Length: 113
Length: 112
Image (tube, rainbow over all chains, first blue to last red; front, side, top):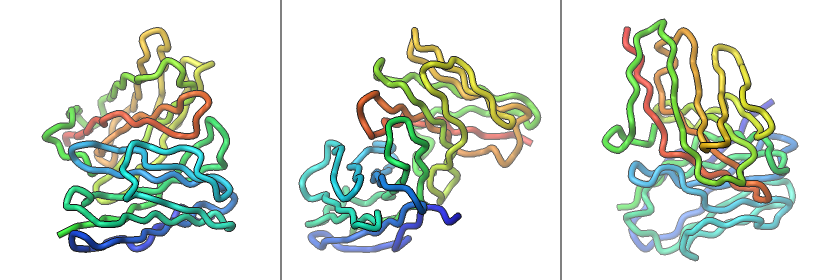
């Protein structure tokens, strides 16, 4: 079956703009988690959605938000982009229970100029 | 991978030798752990997992060991191959949560 897909794969924006990234989970998976990956900070948890509800949230400012649709697809939005938001944004899906295997997509590389 | 070698511990291993990658996890309440492999330009790839009621689990050429007393995980790769060159991350799932906390990663370089 198809893996986790993310669109777009690459994105270039300028400071102050906003961006929306999309993630389609593995079929049957109801949980989608988002992570930010940078050389300096590693993989940082942003938030997790299950059945259209945010269940967990990391320590990121309110400029970072997300949502999940009834088909489990998820989007994350970053408003008022800053240079430091340049990163690889990864989404991962699982069935949504504790201790479930979590599988990652290829990521969206965001560059903020 | 995304974690540039400046801040990333690196393990260099001769092709054919065994590799051992270590990880110290942070939360004593974590009861599920995953090892991931990340190649350059790709997302992390699931390798093997282990639950806290086990201390060892084997896969194909890989073994994960869990020591809950000292909060330590290790990943052993047998007969390391050039294709094993990547950054390896451990991730812990604290009990009662649906999130994963990732270690800083280790870069594995396989020398021909």
